[in-house]
Image (cartoon, rainbow, N blue to C red; front, side, top):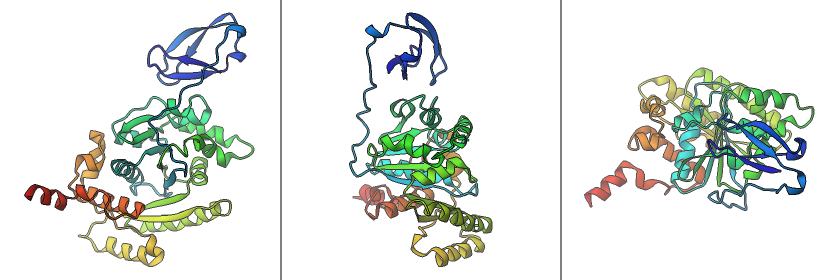
Length: 327
């Protein structure tokens, strides 16, 4: 393999020079920035092999990352909001986190103020390696972006005659021991890419907005999950009630219904907070935009639940800040 560096954006690409005519000048296109530039393919006797160096800032986790899929077939329940803020909070707690956006809308990157030129599609198709497709979002937090190009990747997966459900697992396997957490944001609906995510993940976190249709959607999603569980170990580990509005009776009733159906899997609800609608415009997580608000407090509690450590991020709570200031 030959290493080619784009003169415009400095992205590194690997090319099999053996498939190109030697002693010939050809035009190539950077898959990251679309810049076209010429290269010269030297004879094989003078060709030097080059391998991209590993990204040393990733973690070295011999036990492997916890792979948490944030998923529900119904839209509008807070999947991307949960994926982004869960990833940001874990990163703030000191863990190395990779956020994988498997939605064609590509909103996870936008929510953190990033516009990746490449991402999951290029990794799935083999056009880019992990170190080229992943971008840094914050300290301890990296993103593997989604977007409209994933529609093409879905078609490629659909055309596979064997093992199509493992395509994502094969692409992400080299990253399993480089992070502490891999959080996967999924799109609404049920398609081949969602199935791929569930075959890769080891835990499922399901946000459920406290309304009747979401409750019905959770029941249908659970049935679909059972089909996956015939082939691999996969736990619906967390049910996260979202958009709790205590001014209305119905959300509280549905919350009680969830607890009766799913027991200890039901997390503390995320209360309605108008700041959630504003944060994407500023490219910030809820912890950066409104750290003292209800939404930030509720997502900090979710992080404590996942880590099983009630002391995590306590210093960020408003009462803790007040004590420090008064002292």
